[in-house]
Image (cartoon, rainbow, N blue to C red; front, side, top):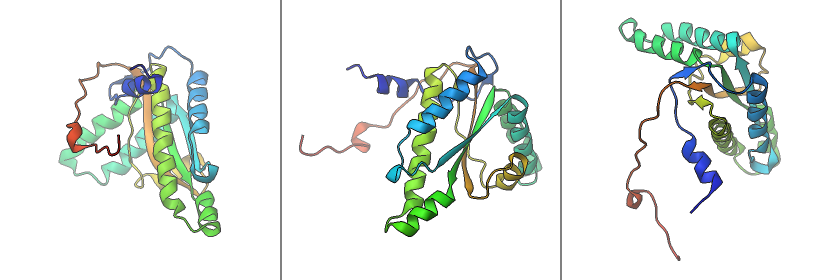
Length: 197
């Protein structure tokens, strides 16, 4: 069976060894990210997902401020590993900061008898996967990180982020500087059930 979507999802992998040797421009990367966010479905077409795209020094600044916040939280004897991660993430071309707009979510919660907080999280996950997969299709490596909420206030102050935007994830991206290990899967019998086929 040949399926372009499955092929694209298969190409999407976690890349920690990032570099600056991408074959497309920052403008092309920005365009890919924006279009992936635009095309991601959301409940009631709420379009609650937001993205801040950081390139170059701005991306490095994010990982430096994250490093400093974590320095106060991670035991000194264990900080070398954390420091190494921050350096690896900053070595790429940029970082996407993913947010969900709580004003949008709250307005829907007030209007309809559904849990749009939950639906917003669904949108966030789909948006992150869409961006990650679209970057992979362009041969840009990435990984998904979660240093929120410990860096939320610093991010809000540094980039003048609206108070209603809630940080959900961070995605450092750049060139693939290492091969991907073989991906393994749990047994299908432990994961799937099909009825009525």
